[in-house]
Length: 271
Image (cartoon, rainbow, N blue to C red; front, top):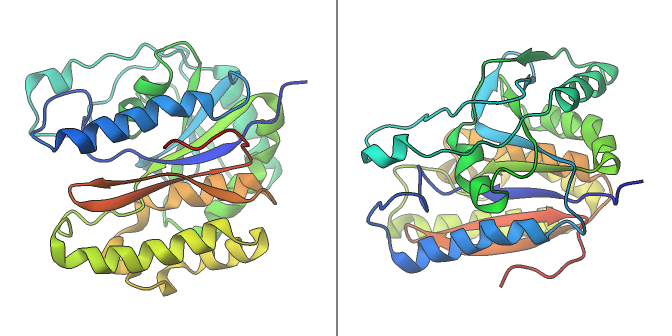
């Protein structure tokens, strides 16, 4: 039987950072790239596949990428030409896509598949650094409406995949306000992150309650005017079950802190 996989929430920063020159502080970029690379060591064994939940895909119902050879989806604009030449020939896994739908529908969720969907930057930017096309990857969409409690339940439905060698990873950002990367937002970000870290690393039952009501957190809407970058955390927290959350990484991006979490792993944290 495969070793039980952890789950993880991974900040993917912004655009094709780490893959093209964007004029960002070198230390910031080097640190987050090092973090992405370290995710390979988070599970105790190489996963059979990765199920990636990206902030950059929303659909009417949870929808899985079902191609065996997914294309690239350059879902950003205004970057140098090389940003649109990034390649990542990670294989898909149609059998895993079918299994995801089976588990979701068993839990009462309508689902769908998309054989044409490509890897968006929420997936290929960080995970190209983690798995250079040697592990199958399937993307799962968020569900329209972005209800936090509903996405916790989606995660719980997918929890059996962890015992089938599947590494469930949510890709978003713990702070995502494109107008808020300024010094005046640092205190607001600090207040929200203090709440988020306490909530995620505390008692699992309380964690679900707090995350379901995340908009009551200090400065919540200052940090997430729209919640799509936070909701992948709900899926991986739901899949974590009773496993405790741990801070995997903390670091600045454009001067504002981002935080990554994992659940269920016992290996060392990224420095």
